Length: 126
Image 1 (cartoon, rainbow, N blue to C red):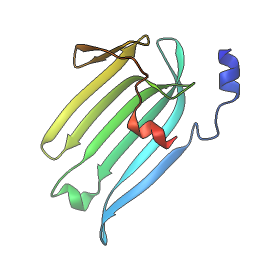
Image 2: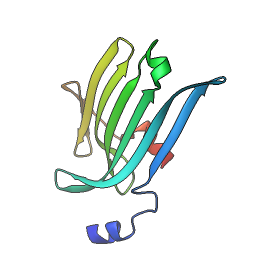
Image 3: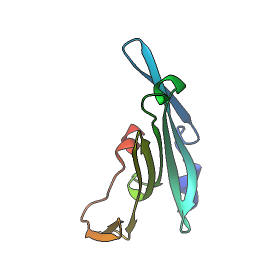
Image 4: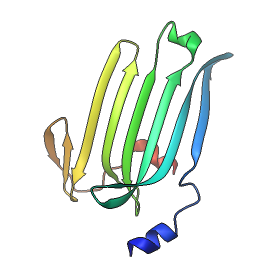
Protein backbone atom coordinates (compact mmCIF):
# COMPACT_ATOMS: atom_id res chain seq x y z
CA UNK A 1 0.00 0.00 0.00
CA UNK A 2 2.80 2.41 0.82
CA UNK A 3 4.33 1.93 -2.62
CA UNK A 4 1.11 3.04 -4.31
CA UNK A 5 1.04 6.18 -2.16
CA UNK A 6 4.52 7.14 -3.31
CA UNK A 7 3.72 6.22 -6.91
CA UNK A 8 0.98 8.85 -6.91
CA UNK A 9 3.02 11.63 -5.34
CA UNK A 10 1.41 15.01 -6.05
CA UNK A 11 3.19 17.36 -8.46
CA UNK A 12 4.02 19.90 -5.76
CA UNK A 13 6.27 17.51 -3.79
CA UNK A 14 9.85 18.57 -4.46
CA UNK A 15 8.78 22.11 -5.28
CA UNK A 16 10.21 25.22 -3.60
CA UNK A 17 8.06 28.34 -3.23
CA UNK A 18 9.85 31.68 -2.96
CA UNK A 19 8.15 34.77 -1.53
CA UNK A 20 9.40 38.30 -1.04
CA UNK A 21 7.80 40.68 1.41
CA UNK A 22 7.85 44.39 1.90
CA UNK A 23 6.31 47.34 3.66
CA UNK A 24 4.88 49.93 1.28
CA UNK A 25 7.74 50.60 -1.17
CA UNK A 26 10.48 49.05 0.97
CA UNK A 27 11.58 45.42 0.60
CA UNK A 28 11.70 43.61 3.96
CA UNK A 29 12.90 40.07 3.32
CA UNK A 30 11.98 36.71 1.90
CA UNK A 31 10.47 33.35 2.74
CA UNK A 32 11.04 29.91 1.24
CA UNK A 33 8.61 27.00 1.58
CA UNK A 34 9.69 23.54 0.54
CA UNK A 35 7.89 20.18 0.54
CA UNK A 36 9.94 17.01 0.10
CA UNK A 37 9.43 13.27 0.56
CA UNK A 38 11.05 11.99 3.76
CA UNK A 39 10.62 9.45 6.54
CA UNK A 40 10.25 9.65 10.31
CA UNK A 41 10.66 6.61 12.57
CA UNK A 42 10.32 4.34 9.55
CA UNK A 43 7.14 6.00 8.25
CA UNK A 44 6.96 7.70 4.88
CA UNK A 45 6.23 11.41 5.39
CA UNK A 46 6.35 14.78 3.75
CA UNK A 47 8.89 17.20 5.19
CA UNK A 48 7.66 20.78 5.05
CA UNK A 49 10.40 23.31 5.69
CA UNK A 50 10.04 27.06 5.94
CA UNK A 51 12.64 29.77 6.21
CA UNK A 52 11.85 33.45 6.85
CA UNK A 53 14.60 36.09 6.79
CA UNK A 54 14.74 39.85 6.80
CA UNK A 55 17.04 41.57 4.31
CA UNK A 56 20.34 43.21 5.25
CA UNK A 57 18.81 46.70 5.53
CA UNK A 58 16.09 45.63 7.96
CA UNK A 59 18.58 43.46 9.87
CA UNK A 60 20.14 46.68 11.18
CA UNK A 61 16.87 47.40 13.04
CA UNK A 62 15.17 44.04 13.59
CA UNK A 63 16.59 40.72 12.45
CA UNK A 64 14.27 37.81 11.68
CA UNK A 65 15.62 34.30 11.11
CA UNK A 66 12.84 31.74 11.54
CA UNK A 67 13.27 28.10 10.52
CA UNK A 68 10.59 25.40 10.77
CA UNK A 69 10.60 21.69 9.93
CA UNK A 70 7.31 19.78 10.00
CA UNK A 71 6.89 16.08 9.21
CA UNK A 72 3.43 15.44 7.79
CA UNK A 73 1.28 12.37 7.22
CA UNK A 74 1.24 11.66 3.47
CA UNK A 75 -2.43 10.67 3.56
CA UNK A 76 -4.01 13.77 5.14
CA UNK A 77 -1.14 16.20 5.87
CA UNK A 78 -1.71 15.91 9.64
CA UNK A 79 1.28 16.63 11.85
CA UNK A 80 3.66 13.97 13.14
CA UNK A 81 6.40 16.30 14.41
CA UNK A 82 7.46 19.94 14.21
CA UNK A 83 10.69 21.69 15.17
CA UNK A 84 10.85 25.48 15.15
CA UNK A 85 13.74 27.85 15.68
CA UNK A 86 12.43 31.39 16.12
CA UNK A 87 14.85 34.34 16.01
CA UNK A 88 13.03 37.69 15.91
CA UNK A 89 14.96 40.65 17.27
CA UNK A 90 15.90 39.82 20.86
CA UNK A 91 13.20 37.14 21.05
CA UNK A 92 14.70 33.67 20.61
CA UNK A 93 12.82 30.43 21.11
CA UNK A 94 13.20 26.80 20.16
CA UNK A 95 10.01 24.77 20.04
CA UNK A 96 9.19 21.18 19.23
CA UNK A 97 6.10 19.01 19.38
CA UNK A 98 5.25 15.53 18.18
CA UNK A 99 2.35 13.13 18.22
CA UNK A 100 2.36 9.57 19.47
CA UNK A 101 -0.26 7.39 17.92
CA UNK A 102 -3.56 9.09 17.28
CA UNK A 103 -4.36 10.38 20.76
CA UNK A 104 -1.31 12.04 22.34
CA UNK A 105 0.53 15.30 21.65
CA UNK A 106 3.82 16.04 23.39
CA UNK A 107 4.85 19.70 23.61
CA UNK A 108 7.43 21.27 25.96
CA UNK A 109 7.70 17.98 27.88
CA UNK A 110 3.95 18.09 28.59
CA UNK A 111 1.46 15.51 27.40
CA UNK A 112 -1.94 16.41 25.92
CA UNK A 113 -4.75 14.09 24.91
CA UNK A 114 -6.02 14.84 21.42
CA UNK A 115 -9.19 13.58 19.78
CA UNK A 116 -8.64 14.91 16.26
CA UNK A 117 -5.62 15.11 13.95
CA UNK A 118 -3.30 18.09 14.51
CA UNK A 119 -2.32 20.24 11.52
CA UNK A 120 0.50 22.67 10.87
CA UNK A 121 -1.11 25.94 9.67
CA UNK A 122 1.44 26.32 6.87
CA UNK A 123 0.57 22.86 5.53
CA UNK A 124 -2.82 24.22 4.45
CA UNK A 125 -1.03 25.92 1.55
CA UNK A 126 -0.63 22.47 0.04
